Image 1 (tube, rainbow, N blue to C red):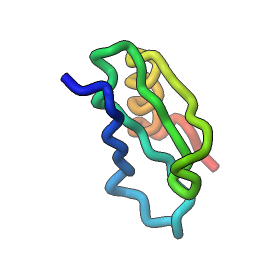
Image 2 (image 1 turned 60 degrees about the vertical axis):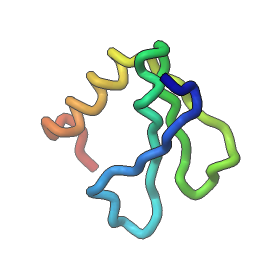
Image 3 (image 1 turned 90 degrees about the horizontal axis):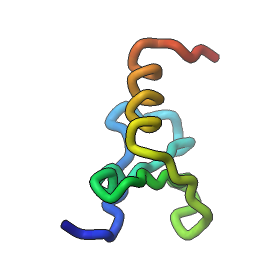
Length: 66
């Protein structure tokens, strides 16, 4: 298994580039790095896989509104 991040953006990302990218391929190594898609060489935030899954599930359930 690779330790190089494979960055992906949501398929729902169509808001003019205001997106985040996540490298979920590293979850097996205990981390999910997340970065701003507009600044791919900038800083990343890292989450434990269970926390990332809970966050994504909350988004899908509509728990966050604007």
